Amino acid sequence: MGWLDIIPLLQKALPLLARAVPMLEVFINTRGNAREEMRTTLDQFSTQLRGELAASTTNHAELSDAIAANNEHLKILSADLTRLRTVTEEQSTRLATSEAQIQTMAGTLRTLLILTGVLLVVCIVLLILLLKHHA
Image (cartoon, rainbow, N blue to C red; front, top):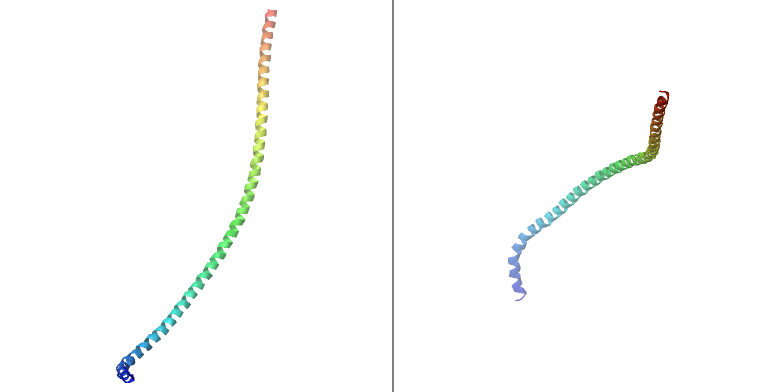
């Protein structure tokens, strides 16, 4: 096949190429539009993402403030709890001392009651002896 045979083939392909050029132009324009649409979509997405990040930062700041306030409350509660433990320990010591004193007093009272009973019996025996002696 020589150069002369290529010319009729090019003549047959020329109408096809003439039709393909507008299609190629439309394809290139749609790709350009798609890029613009993609840029627009990405811009919208980045704007939304920035807004959500700003909201998240605000929420994080509020959460940090709430945690700081709770830490202050926990410090106060911890101090109160320590004070209450100290008071409870002091009261436990006082209670133990009072119980020991009550036990001592109860022992002393029992001894006094026994001695009083013995003394009463001795007095009654002496009274009976005295009455027998006078009678």
